[in-house]
Each structure stands twice: as structure tokens, then as C-alpha cells.
Length: 544
Image 1 (tube, rainbow, N blue to C red):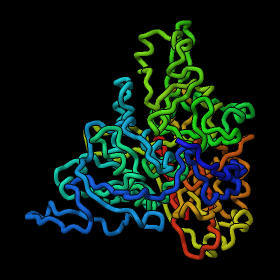
Image 2: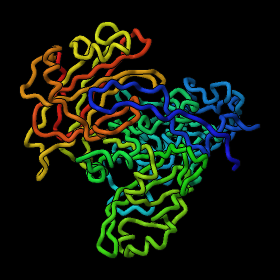
Image 3: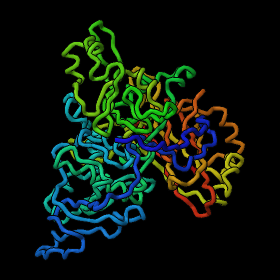
Image 4: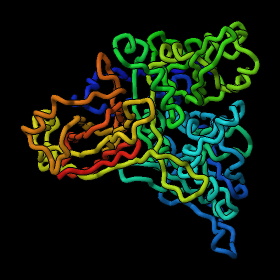
């Protein structure tokens, strides 16, 4: 395809990542794939596809049905062609079905819409598919979350097909939100199905578009948003790891990655466009990739490497550097049984392997999402002693939040302008042979991605359990015991903070206090907040 015109986006906000730093959320910092960024203008004669009825135009009369349970559903609340650029689309129907015979990452094939940031996150939620070792196909936590989001059992019934009605769920500050859609799809915008019957991906994409207000809202975004909204997890974004690791002491990201990989969704992006090239060693600029697996791989010499398996949501265009599928010299260093164990295959399917060192060198943005632990009554549901906890409330500008964002840092210590919470890390929840505990924290706000929001959040280790909110002078004393996050890195590091950004802490047994505040620019109405914590038996307590 012809090379598109250069699209410029400002990706370089410098924001101090330290706990307690004042953070301004940029308006919209998008991850768009350069090669497939296209204008959403329908071709002449464009059609919108429906998945469950014979071909007909919307103006045709609906067929008479004897059973209301099978009455055709039309979503009047979401107009596919809403907007000036889509209004001229024609709509026709075609009979297809929601496929449930294995929801796999390789089913995800990006269409012309620039929503790699969503499709990459979706790829990490479902099974890896062909080539994956059997023990990697049964991640019960991901399976239950995928069921929550995609509702495959419900959407694959004959009743759902007959009605053309499908249900999905996505997460925001108010919790899980169900989204109901009909079966009409716009082919020029939708993700392509990898097989004739694999229509679950464009249906999920349509539901997510409705969740955000339209397909146009998906044309460029940030993977942190989609990871949290697809999983209900806590997302954390890192940037420029290769240069950061040289400046950070006592941080072993590789060890952290191996520790969290089984309970996390991971994506990455290459935003480097300085060379004016669509691809660098096969990696596409302004494009998001899914991390399907992290493995320790043994060489014939006995040496071990940490390997990252990635996937391009295009389903093609792979890494061409060292340890690429066609790099025979590198793969000769690995025994056949080891290649079989990790599921190595030389296929042009968009998936490929990289060493950990090349991964952090070649990519710029890294998104980690700690998965929640959903309640389940099923005997085969996820079994874990990890507990997820949250508290929620509202900030009211001028009352519990400053009216002007520039005042946030000045008023943060005043108890009327902050919220506080308390939790404990006890000795009995510390892992064997480990003196600390990994705890994820996140402050979610009820705000649109275009709104400018400032946030301050501090974590302190304290000696006495508080019975109430700490006053200004008490907080000043507590600030001497501030705890810095493990990631984002607490020293010598710059990251971009977004609406869904969280923190990972490595905490010793003890008592902890969280103090946080937020302010929206130009807003007078109250807005909701939700503070969340993931970790072993961590319970947040709201202080008043």
C-alpha cells in the first residue's frame, strides 16, 4: 500500500513519577499505527454487515416472527454511521455467527481502523492459540475475565443469533458496565475475522466503540485505557526502559516481569518516528503489540535467556532482528525439545520472539496490567489468596477539591482537600523466603480522556493505626516515611501518566497510609474516584 502522509502527535510530556509529585494527565496521547492510519471515509457503495439475517437493507420490512424471543433486535441507541464522515454508508445484512470454538489471540486481525491499542490488549486476554504449550492455555484468571468481558456462552446461543443481540462488559470507575449491541457491522472499519466464522472480534470491537461513543473514538488511543477497561485490572505504563535501567539502582525489572507475568496482561508500543520509516527491523512505528508470553529458555550451552513472545495485531509483519523466526543461526543454539517446550514455530502469522534485552531496547512504551481476582462460585474458578480491595467517594471542587488545579499542590496537606485510606501488610501474608509483598495501587477517576486532571498520591509507612484522617501537621511528619513505588521507577525516570495509571509497590510488613487528591480543570460538578489495591489479603479502610 502507498505510504500515508506523516501524522504528527506530541508524545513527549515530561512528568515527575515520584510519589507525591503533581501529575497532569495529558489530553489525549494516542498510539496509532502509522502504516494503517487512514481517514474514516466510506468507499463508494460501502456496506455495513449484520451477522445473523439474510441480506436485506434497513429499509426492508422486518420479517414476521411468531416468537418474541427471536424478534430481531436493532440497537437504536448506537448509530453506526453517526458522524459526518460515516453518514453516507449504506447498510446491508449477511448471516454470520459469534464463534466460540476457542477464543484465541490469532483470531485478532486489525482492519483499517487505528485501534491497535485495543486489539493488542484484547489479544492478551484470550488464549495464545496455536503454538502455545498446553500448560499455557488454561490461565484460569484470564479465562474467567474473558468470560466476563466477552460473554461467549451467552452470545453463542441460538436465541442470541436469531435476535442479533450480543452482550459485552467493560470496566470503569463505576465498576463493570454491560454493553448491548446488535449484529450490524461496518466492514471498512471493523477488525477482520481470521476465519470465515471468527466474528467475535469485530463484535467485541463494536461494543467497545459503543462504550467510548463511536468508532471514531477508537482511531488512536493508549493501551493503558484498554487494558484496564478489558480486565478491571490495574494498569501501569513505563517508558524508555533501556535508558532508565542504567540510572536506576536496586531495580531488577527482569525479575519483576517474571514475578508478575502469570497474573498480568502486557503490551508494548514503538512510538519512535524520528527516522521517517514505517518499519525498523520489522517493527512498526506508532503501533501497539501484545505480549503473549514470557519464558526462560535454555541454550545448548546451559545458558538461559529471558524471551518475550509478541504479536502484531495485523497478523503479519514481524521482527526481523536477532531471534526472529527466520534467524536460523540463533535458533540452532536451542535444542529441539526446548523449542517444542516453548512452542516455537516459524510462521508468518504476526507473532515472534525477542530477548528481554532487545525488547526493552527496541520498544518505547511498556504497559503492565495486574489482573483482578473475580469472585466465583464455580468449583473450577480461580483459587488464590490474593484479594482485591477498593474504596470510593467524590471530590467536589471548592469543597473537597481545590477549584483551580494550580492550587492542588498548595492545598494537598489540608485534610479537607484530600482523601485518606489505611491498610496493613502482615507477617503471615509474606511469601516464603521473601521479606516483602507486591501490592498494586491505582486511583481511578470519573473523567473523559480529553479532560485535564491533576492528581497527587502519597504512600507512607506509619507506626500507629490511625483512627481518623491525619491533619496538616501530622501529614507533614508522615512525609518523612514516604514509600516510593517499584514501578514506575522512583529515581531518574520520566513517564507519561494517563487516566488509568497505577503503581506497583514492594512493601515490608507494617501499617500504611495513602493520601490522595485530584482536581479537574474548568469543572464545578463533583466527580467520582475509586482507590484500588491488589495484593494478598490487602484491605483498604477509608479514613474520615
